[in-house]
Length: 92
Image (cartoon, rainbow, N blue to C red; front, side, top):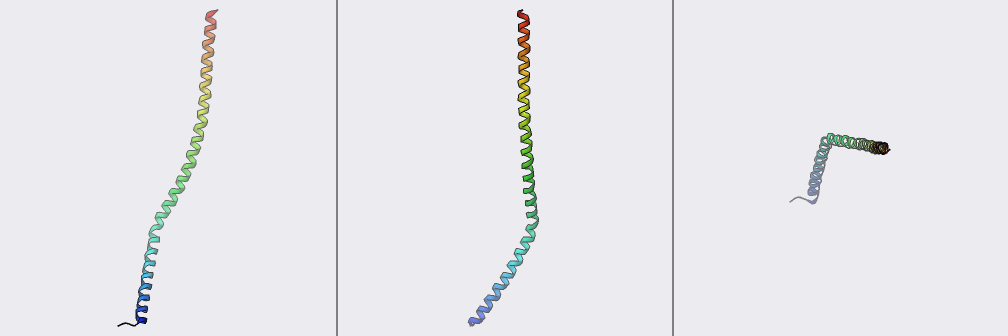
């Protein structure tokens, strides 16, 4: 039968070897995850830049929409003016 000291030494050696191997596995995992983390960081940066770009595009579209409304109002006013002029000329 093993003594308590032998059991403790055997257990501590097994736990240390497990700890060393598990750390080695985690280091390998960190190295294998490094490219994935890099891609994820680049992707998130790209999404931020695209969000800024789309916000600028939406702002420009809103400005163009206002311009189109003004042009439409001017065309309608000029059309009504021409119709009113034609009616007033024909009635004289």
